[in-house]
Length: 322
Image (cartoon, rainbow, N blue to C red; front, side, top):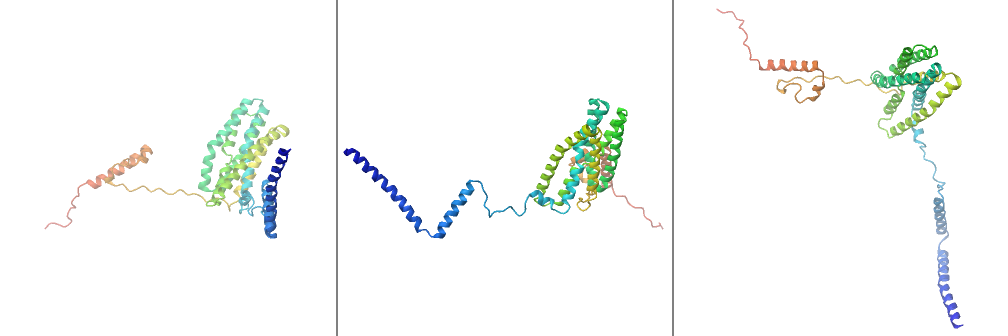
């Protein structure tokens, strides 16, 4: 019995410090002013809101909004970006559209694949040359005749496929169509580069063009398939050509955002010195030139060497002898 009482006494002694601690905490909280209590409650509320992943109501969206919208708000940016996107739909539609057209009219998937491959190869070969011409003469002066040839070649290609022309005619018109297809992606990026040359938004503009390319290659094949299978076999190719002509002409008409024409700097040959030795010495770039260029350079050096080492000749006297 005595042991039980002693155990109860020890439990009461252990409880008393705990109660004292709670009472001291209440007393300290009672010493805080009403402003300090409000700040403490606000801090606890903010911590709870942060734990739940909720934003502070006072923190609104950034005034600039999306970076893509900031880029498209630039003068003329939205117009040439949309025009380039419409014109680039051909890149994702024409190959599949021509494949479905040839296979539907001839029943030969092998021939359809050959024509589609020839069109793609001709485009890959001629697109860099067209881009170089656009840098030298301006985008407008190159895009207008190029898209005119593309429209005529596409019409001839569709006519040959519908009339079941010989294979060589289909291949020739297909290659001509691919060779004259405008490369609008590089030209749109050139406009972005000219507009945002020293701006940090240039990377955002390039990222926007990458998103546009992804959308084009997702929507274009599906659209070409639906048109070729549900409407007419030639509908996919025709719609692709119409979109290309419309987008290219709209882009060429926007002269305000067109990059400046790049004129190559004239190259003036350095004067030849007899003491410098043959032209090939110390100048490895001359070794890569043609045979006739090296011969002309060597002839110039030999002539200069002869004139430098020739002994001076005395001029005959013009006075009459007595």
